[in-house]
Length: 563
Image (cartoon, rainbow, N blue to C red; front, side, top):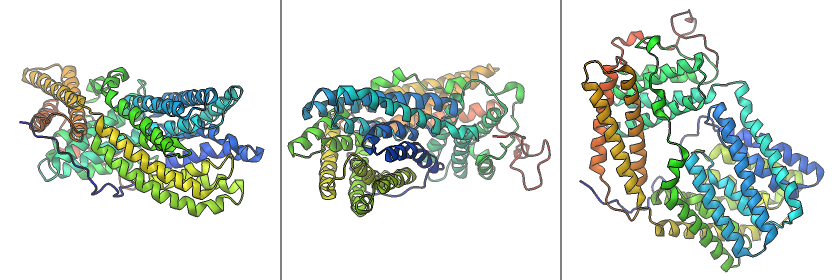
């Protein structure tokens, strides 16, 4: 049975503030550490006009904070190369032509490419927006061919510095990202265990728990193949979270939350005995690995077209109105596009509200920033910190700091009339949001329904595979573990795909009832598999919870594992 997808534009809750991220201070401090030395050096040299190029590299420090350090090293390197590559194309275009229509077109194509690559690689926040901001602004900066090597060299040098800043915390807490991911999985599993699998909201809690557990496994897998004691201990804790997901009535949410608390900071990793013994440890983990990037590119084609079309039309409209900085309208449009039209609408509301409040903050800060170039640099640093500290609570709140920061950056080369800057920014924001959303509605994404059908088929096949193994009198343990992990990953993908499709417009009715039935039967099969594997402890007391003060004896509560 199918039902039509409702076409609603929500307002309730769009501006509601959430809880700050557990690591909100890490990107906030990192961006300050990455931006401050180059900008202060330029200030001392009297060359703040070069700040746009150093900022290009420094802002790469915003990326990768949730990734294990081995994976973060690779991701940050690619971000730096992507940033410098986009900057190179923009500067070359600016040096070759001053035709505004051509420059807007180049910016729109770059924005679509950056959006597609960021989504396909799942690089995470801040996604394509920072890359598009730098490349689009560079298109409209005066440029000559002979200055390109020096400007790109500055970006590459500060990008290398940002890489060092992003990797530095690993010297003190090498397993920090994996510990946080495991703690989030344990807390999510505890929330589901609170429902006992039947109370109100249990389906939503189950989906959140499954997603958190899957993300934690991905974090451990991304850390590399080399095993160590800390990773093995984290893997055992994740198995306990999986048990709570499959058998919530048999789980102890208090103990799960206590384990999660013990993973914060630099304390010891809680000791959890493997219910099957050390000889049968964590089989089939590879089944949870993500699809290669090339398999995630094709479904993003409609989103790429939306981005290119929306950014181009927003820039052209700004030019038609005589706005002096059409790239602001382009960047506003680029920042809107989310997984579906409904989420794009919500982001548009947040962007407009944040920018309008942000220009008021700029009006208040401009007199202070104009007192001295040092004040300008310090105000910019403070806004960098504020943007990353607040954006995790809601996008609009972070935009309140991002907007005046972007306006101040335009004054690094020369002081400008605040009233003119404010007027241009307000017009470009409203224009970019309106045109960008219209493009999102106009470019249909009928592939969303096809992807949901594929996800349903994959989940049903994974469930049948697990059920077939369960029907055997003595199934191979490795095959059963691999089937369980494969089914868990398929159910996570099904829920994410269904959520994305439900907010898309202009498509055929979705098989909502089939999705619900597939999820229910899949999780029942998961529960049966967990019990068949003997993962559910017969006696909860066999799990050793976190130690009390003074109770740290060997074999009692914790392993002596340093982070």
